[in-house]
Image (cartoon, rainbow, N blue to C red):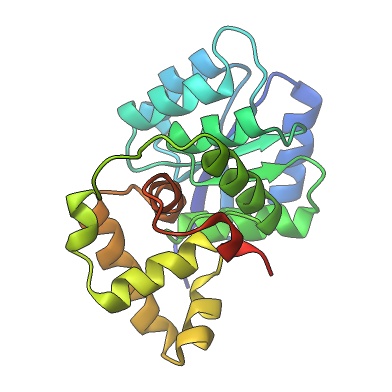
Length: 224
């Protein structure tokens, strides 16, 4: 039996926090260990409660969810943050991912999607839905941040690792990458781990951002 995933809920809406707690209580492998009604309290409490996953709202008093994500991860680097919001806007998506979030989930998501997202992120994978990937790609492509020489970290990737990075940047999961390359999922996990290490990326979400900023993948490459 796998270990219980420790979750922290951060939202200024007490009713929503109560609803989230009720949903998560249906999964015996998830335990809500802390709540916070604003980003400042979340940053203060996280180091003491050591959550595995933090569900973080965006619009909150004291300290918004984007800024709180960056501060919380600096103080509790082993935690993973899923930004949970009503607003699917470019600024929130890119801001959350740049702050170190491992996922971005809309509040209209089903209870099943929420629970699955927590387990996905707790296991070390990022949560990047196709719609979010599309927005991220369009935003970075429209405002490229790097146009100089190719980053030397890319030269460290083997041809296979570069291929895996390109597939990650298209929003494919490990299972989908395994199917595309006709290899075992465990092999893909190994490749992904090496890619992240060589790029110095926190997780696959940041690898996606780097891939597009460096122009490694053309925007059209993610369209089906």
